Image 1 (cartoon, helix red, strand yellow):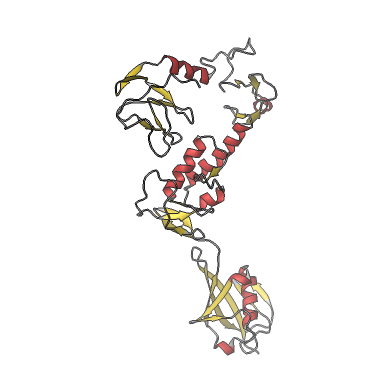
Image 2 (cartoon, rainbow, N blue to C red; image 1 turned 180 degrees about the vertical axis):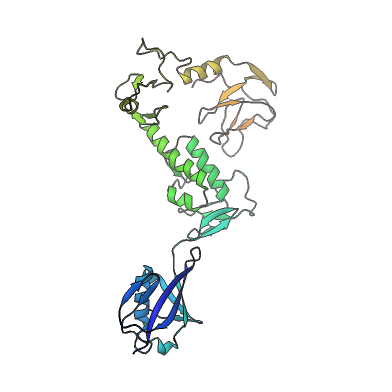
Length: 348
């Protein structure tokens, strides 16, 4: 009876994508596939070719032939070879290792897992407000500009808080869009990925006039200008839930279609009241309101002490708390502790 071979397949490590293939001599005249075994009818070491071995192994393991390499000893068995197993000194009980080529993989930079398809960069990080010390490792964005992985995560968070619907390169002469998939490859954690993906969606919905029901989290688009809204999803579930489109709180005043009964109903009006009536404080010889609105994102900022130059914690805008002048590469209003022209109370 002819000497047959069976291919025994065992995965030695999922993370390394390396599969061990062990050839064993068997005596069987029938073709059958048994768990983890491939019995090949009428195969023997003298006639079975390397190409046939590749085909059978890939079929059994269910991998792509084009991304498969078989190693025997210190040699790679060529997948297009018509030579026999015996020609390559493969004998019964020989051990052959299958290696699967995969796209991607990850490397670690600054404690973050970076996809191996991402190129590192030696250029200065475009997200830093100070000179790059050259010590932090940087990666290249699709547009070619460099960022640090930590800086990128912080920048994404700020863009989401500024209600941006897409993340773009901060370089004014570039402004290329950075797609979510490319950002994620550059080391976002699962939490940061959630902030990016859900944040962009919420910002797009907000831009299109869509709000969220606070009871069931359904997204609702208003038809008309009314403020008293009945959630259709809650209604289908047997619950009558009405909320105010302006303040997004539950509608309390059931006798009115214009006054929800919440105090305050209009957050913007309440904030304007604070800007108009808040006390003042002395800052380098001038009296300024204790509360200002960021000139860019309009978030409330309360000055506590020290420098008059402010960095908005919400959007990262640099401005003077006294005169509200923006930083454009240099401060036009003088040093951090010098008096300048006080800006009037703001209107938002």
